[in-house]
Length: 360
Image (tube, rainbow, N blue to C red; front, side, top):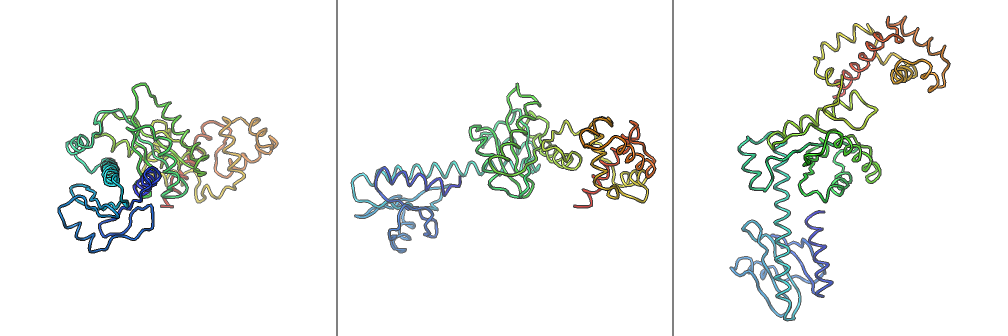
């Protein structure tokens, strides 16, 4: 919830309880939040009050108050009323508004600190000192989750995630540019990587049902020191990128479980292109029709079991054999043998990796 909406909610409650009207003005005397459409005091009176040393000024119809923020007075509060309790209620409102502003400023400071920390913009000493000022533990066990949705800067998804973790005061949720939503989660000593996997699946499910959007979630290894969060952030980003390239059928990717995709991702492009040329010659993976590729993928998923593949696809076994013999004549690989099937599977993964490079 934005600070404007938060203050508006409180003001509406104050009006309901006290039967008084409230208005908060910005530094240039524009209405920031109000409970009425009453006429404001003259600009001259407001300017005189701002330039005076008084923190409060009252007349027969209303009271004016200065709201402090970081040793300045950017806001003025107007409380309309003539009863003896108006001034007291106004002072209470000032205290509440200042607490809201301080809380919002601290939250923003923490958010900015975490963003810079993830990007590696602090030295170890700077990070430690800044964290201490913001009352952030520098030696807690943490992991980073990175969430990407179909829509960039998805505010609905961000609001849903904040609502999911609203009770967890030591977690941080932020978003940086178009790189997705980031959760810095503080872990207990008993939480395992299986628990992180469960949390990631929960996020995918909740975003699907609550925010009505498809999501991909990657998570890092755990770290025990604040200074290591920058590396954890890189791990989560890498896991998301590798996962989307090599494991398109999945929505959750853990940095520890990226399998062979991690190896291929670290290979030079020139080596990958050489391997593809060796397997496909002058052709490409895209030259194979979509139906045959679907058959091959199902065949691999069924551990090279022709009968099970035939049953799942409602295709006669001899038809599958015919398709694989055509592939063998074309590329010299018999997919019914383990070694050739493994080579073709690697070629499919490498081709997908090269394609992702071309799309950037």
